[in-house]
Picture 1 (cartoon, rainbow, N blue to C red):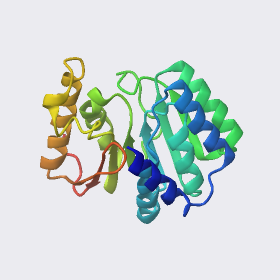
Picture 2: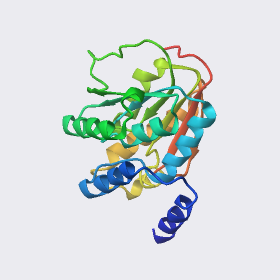
Picture 3: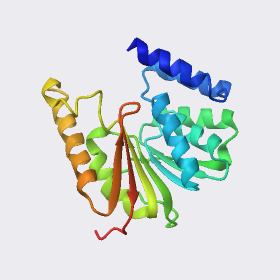
Length: 218
């Protein structure tokens, strides 16, 4: 949408200029069709994390490391732990991390986040869980990793509107419909779970921000 593109350009004119590395990552992601977080949603998330004073962040879905490194740059007192199962993407993320100089602020794991044998090395609670991996498995990520989130911590989930198809599933192709239905089920769960206060934000491809108000009872 042309109007949105112009608005994003206008918004970015007020933001601190991105490190050259991040612009290179954005160009690479566009050329190589790597899904990275949309800029307007990322800016909202970074502001939320700063206001929340987030120090320990767990990300599901590293890809090339774009959002993890952006968080590490914006939150110099934070440490981001990120999980990625694709070996090629993991290697690319490690390379970009080395170029960024943010090695001490990030830990990148090559692993399937849902692999039963995988467990985090530290049992220390996280301030934030950021879910940005396989959309059809959001509920599984949520169930496995929210016990690691401390009370009053945040669970942030990207792509919860999935190009508007969660609101209009009848427009989804037969191939996409099962995934759209899974995201709708996940969104409904977020809205109805009393231990989390959730707001759905119409930025990027849809951002769900859930605050953990009660400890998990699972």
